Length: 246
Picture 1 (cartoon, rainbow, N blue to C red):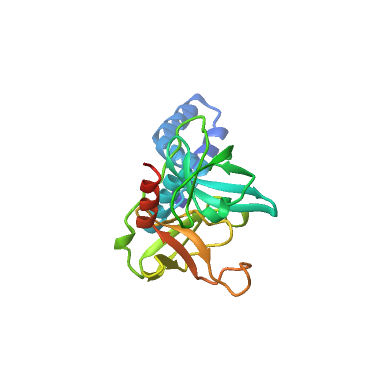
Picture 2: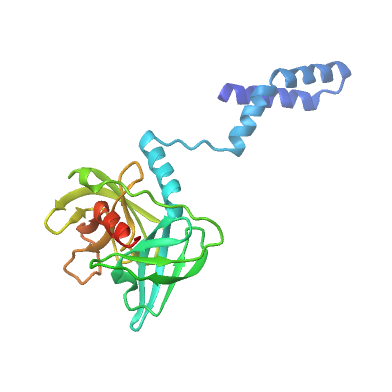
């Protein structure tokens, strides 16, 4: 490449110093001969090539595909603002989130990935548990998540989380399934789940939702994350949605 650059510079220098018609014609021939080299150098100058390995490319594509179906939630309570995350489950604006995010709220604002904010209403639901449904009225159909099967997940499996930790919406983190608590119906993970992530998705590497972030364990009253987070399995989520769709 260095030789090619030198060659291009040399013939340009030669061309600008030519004064006779004969030399001018020779210069034009050189330009035509080296036109492909000039074009390639021009492209490299305007478009630096970014290189990603296969795993990075997969993660980038997954995030860009799923993040439009994830929203940030700000619920106004008597004592302040409760921040959380939600998953769009139908294109008309039904959103799944955690009950503790919106419980006893006076007003709920939902912000989509593109920065648009909507007022949300709570959809009355049946049954107990830390899941809730809210509704917005978008101006156009929304992207939706795909619910996977949580009964096939394994300890050690790689998972991803998208959430709104401390108001930083659209944050992607990754980790593994650390433990499965069958008695309490919880998935434990070391992916970074922080305040504001509740209601957000835990994803497998194909982009299916295998859990909904619910809580973290720490000894300092939710000030920091020490790598112990919990999610509600997707199979329980599907039961909740089906029960409240009748």
